[in-house]
Each structure stands twice: as structure tokens, then as C-alpha cells.
Length: 33
Image 1: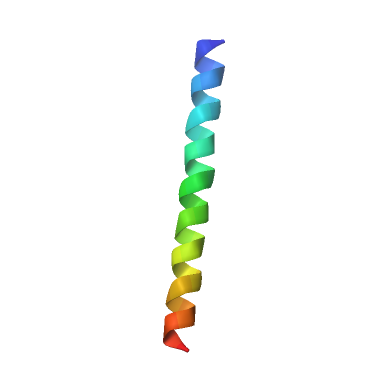
Image 2 (image 1 turned 90 degrees about the vertical axis):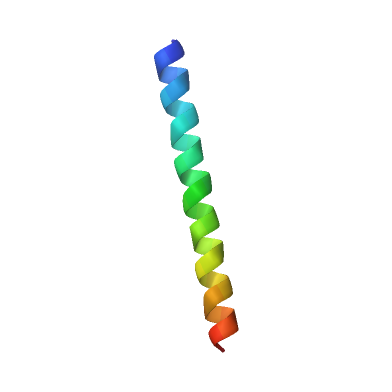
């Protein structure tokens, strides 16, 4: 159980990090224009 919950938490961090990188890309595109 602990292992599955831990992996789920790491997966959530990856998704959140991916979302942050996506936002940064959007900001860069906005600043370019």
C-alpha cells in the first residue's frame, strides 16, 4: 500500500511539474509576441 501511494504521489509531482513547464512555455510565447 505504501509503495503504491508513494508512486502515486511522485506521479502527481510529475504532472504538476509538467503543468508548470507548460505555463512557462506559454509565458515565453506571450513575451515573444
